[in-house]
Amino acid sequence: MAVGTTNGDRVLFTHGMANLELQVAVSADTRFRTASVSKWLTAVAALKLEAVGKLALDAPIQDYCPQYPVKQWRMTTRELLNHTAGVRHYITLNGENPETDEQRALLNERDAAELSAAVLHFDSVIDALDIFKHDPLLYKPGTQQHYTSPGYRVLGCVISGANGTSYNQAMQELVFDPARMTATTMDDTTRLIPGRAAGYRRTTSGKQVPAEYVDLSGNVPAGGHLSTPDDLVNFGLSLLEGKLLSEKSLNLMSNGSLATALTKRIQVGPINSSHYASGVMVVEQGEHTLWYHSGAQPGARSMLAVMPNAALVVAIQVNDEGVNRAQLVTYTSQIIASITGVHFNLLLR
Image 1: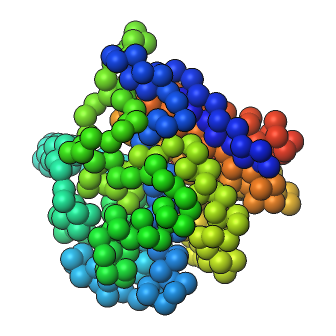
Image 2 (image 1 turned 90 degrees about the horizontal axis):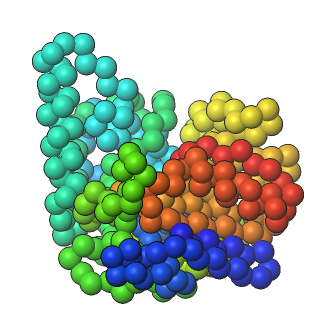
Image 3 (image 1 turned 135 degrees about the vertical axis):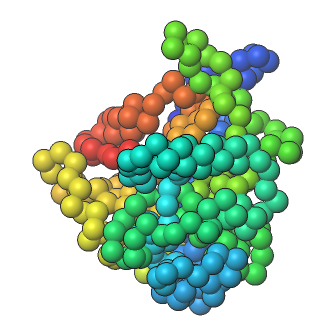
């Protein structure tokens, strides 16, 4: 585990092992999987392209990503950003309710095919669209909100097309370089990456064993980066310092338009209301606001939170699935409360 915070002074806490077999301890240079925190990074890249006129958020996505087929309804980048585009999430996580043996068998077959694809290596985010691009939309875009990692894969294709480069090059130019994220990179299983933490899971008896193998090359825009808490803190600080987004773009990020209206119905506790805006969760506590995103995948748990009016950034990364996301968001809330005295109740997203 590694925890990075800044509130005037930077603090880094490390604990445990980056690699149990080699007995390598976690250090400031250990790179962990970001999991779904990558969505926030991807969203910022899209908003930067919008700010310089390279990407129109309300244009059809095929203007930038013709590799994704036209569907029964028009879909925009704005809807991809806030999960209202109607693109499905992973199989079995879309409210599927098969009623017959034939329907159950078909669902199981599709689920098995998707799980098999999770160990394949893709040369680009565009190639990875083949897994789901022919599936119908779940609903007319803009009418509902449904969290979707495949939707952010499409967003990666949009960014690539709008920038005229690969998605990975776009992220380097638009986000990583200006935010001084020198350790952040794609989690590429075909490369030797210094400092990459091994991932672990827990057996029913609590024993640590290697995490299930997955190749994240097809899921990079939604959750396929390696980073350090120090880099994630740099990302948060760069947002606060205006090095990544203008005030107008920050407002687009933290106010998801229709998505905000849809998801502000979610009440967390008696005071707080959380909603998913554009690539980030937003929770309000009186006059205080917190931007945050959590993530979970094989061998990793992650959390990044930014409290703008306190100039506070908290980043937590873990390479052990034994730490669940509920524990992670609780720990994050406790750190924020200990520094600022403000208590936030956070959703698992």
